[in-house]
Amino acid sequence: MSIKTYLLGSGFVLSTAFSIYFSASSGAQTAAQTVPAHTFDYQIGAILYQQKASEYRALAYQAYNLARLRLDEDLDKKSVKNLPKAERKRPRAIIVDIDETVLDNSPANAYSAKNNLPFNVKDWYAWGEMRKAKPVPGAVDFLNYAVSKGVKIFYISNRDEPQKQATIDNLKSAGFQDVSADNVWLRQSPANSTKEPRRADVAAKYRIVMLMGDNLDDFSNVFERKSILDRFAATDNARELFGKRFIVLPNAMYGTWESAVYNYERLTEEQKAERRVNALELP
Image 1: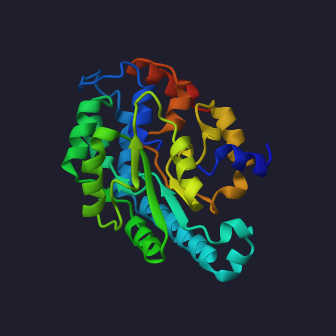
Image 2: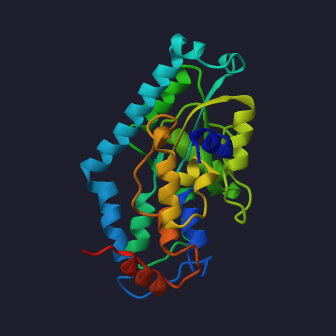
Image 3: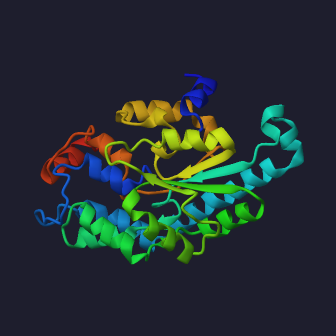
């Protein structure tokens, strides 16, 4: 697939990792339910990496520093002259995911791992209502800088619509400017997690300068529900876009990458643990 075809397919249009994890999980529990001890030990290293590793912070700063560099390039009048005339006067927009892109939910994951709890809606909603998620390093400075330059930020997340007010409150308390019901677009139905229509709605009125997320589904439906090998192929095909139009944040805790390991099947926690071990590549 050519880059041009890829872009047309995407429409330049996280998943929220919790919702992806939920859709791929077995039981789709609506209430907390413990499972055998140590089932979630595999997540502890990923959670500690996000919470305690300076390397994680460096990667987040690196992503947002690169985003600012790309935005400054786009703001340069010389760059605008290279655009088609129809695009030159369109207002700029940046699309960002929320969870693990601008807000850090690792405390919620830590609670689940420490208590041997699978993802469940009750605990996820309860965490959101706390409004305690801290900003990802570099996110506040960059997005507020973009706002100061007249760029419209759209927060497109697969958090559920009932979480909207708590999400807006959390974003504001974390220090993000220009946050309202008009630019925080959450998932309207758990049965439909694709972000493509929402990205298309932004593209209809704005020129999208870049998209930022921790999950490839945050960038295009080209990546959605693909096998591991097909995700590799789609990523390789879009290699020229990463670091330019697509800026990726690190997240080893959860995401579509994990769903692909399970082949998007509804499995028990024990079956998923077996799949993870069997997916390891050995010498």
